[in-house]
Image 1: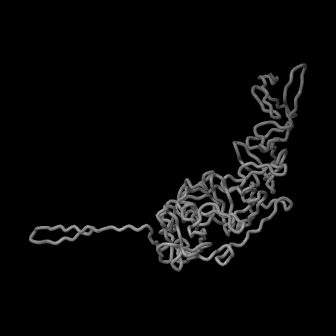
Image 2 (image 1 turned 135 degrees about the vertical axis):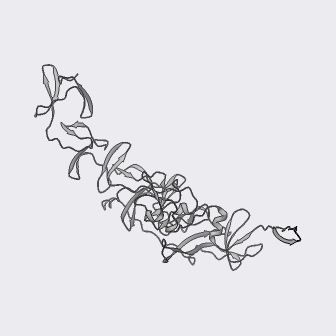
Image 3 (image 1 turned 180 degrees about the vertical axis):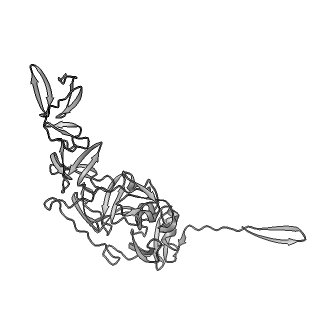
Length: 392
């Protein structure tokens, strides 16, 4: 409605002009950012200098707009602050599209398991529009539209080219800035249009490979681990699902080699997993195999350089520790006569033994020390002693 005001001798005459609104069953959208606005699923790349609060994990690759991001839902350490404080240059793909975000706390980067264990899978090439799967766009009935993105009344998204919806692979390049600098880089996003021209969403098998397309705008997931239907899957840089057949999966990154284990169907093993007679622990948020010390359920465990859980006596950081048959570290107790401190380390050199006087038992070591007036855990069993040191 437009308003025009004219002043005649202190008398105000208001003329109302009623605009007649026309609706159309389809409308053009000049670029994909408008499509994402329609689907209410797109996020924006924030400027590093914006001051907006973002969330991240210490060794993560990206920052998040939402602390409840699905890729953060199992993280134990989540930091918040500005983008500049995070030190991250990329926005989480899930947050950027309005999903319920989340990334992680990153455990120590595992080292490559011993060569005899996993089978390395090679990442296939992403098909270009000229590949066999890409079919020429058929002539579609109905009105023709300008080239670019369109959405129909049912929410289906199309990309028009030469007046007709395109089918097969669709590539979109957008320019992004590095933080608050003037330097830019090209961000490439892939889509796939089914035979009727509508943009694919969800799982699709194309050319024998599995892909997943975001339910909002149909953009392809790639080069990361994503949570889908409460399971985690890892996709290579070409968007192809890794490890569909199950087994060990290797991923080389800028900061080292990461190992995963997939179930049949491609979902990643999470938490404890027994493989080939040995126990392994896989990160909750990413599915990465862990090496070194792992805290779980109030107990500490130690995984060797190949990721296998250890038991018995081990030396770590110059100190000795004892890991029970369950793998849990012993602490504040006697194991084989040796006292283990609260942090699990063995520092007291004297070995205690059981001793019997008459028909009564007591527990002590060569220095003259003996257990008395309390309860002591000895080889996994709690024993009580009176003030004189006799076992009750």
